[in-house]
Length: 219
Ligand code: DX5
Ligand code: ZN
Image (cartoon, rainbow, N blue to C red):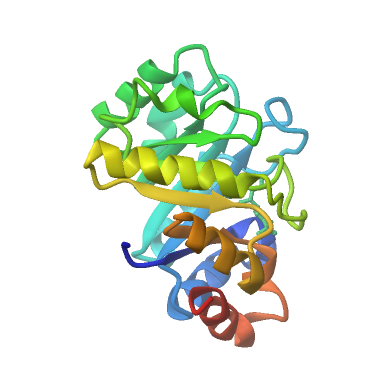
């Protein structure tokens, strides 16, 4: 099994001090910085776009792990790349052509991820396993932080892990939603190696971030 990486979701950060929050989670041991972009259309919430994280890109040298919950994506992929994303993940349903979106991300020189929802059949991965660098399995319905982990996702995670092993490629298996030290143990056992966590990292303020990250990593 690959090393476990923690990708704190800045959706739970204090947006009034975003640069300082990113520096704080970097220093607290984050591996990736998870950036949730929402459009109020693909998901029922609006967060922020490329100009916002471009302004805070210099706050950390860590991997910017950009999770696009927008539809469609293709017209904006260059903006997200130029703003400083290292990994760009699109939802399988964001449309109209997943394969083309992933090709575009690769052509921009970035790592490409595909996100699957609880009800997305894993077979959507069939024709893209040779081009993805990350598969994101949602463990909640996307749109909001602080939701309860959905245990039905564990079987999906295990199935995606089998597909990654079969591909023989170095692909991150990321999970997102309701991750706590308790659910972290379950998703790691199911095969996840990148854990997104918002609420569980940012709770109790900056002096607790290192402890919170360690509690998840040590699960
Ligand atoms: C929700 C986002 C998540 C969210 C996770 O759609 O994709 O990244 O911030 O938040 P928690 O860890 O609080 O469930
Ligand atoms: Zn996310």
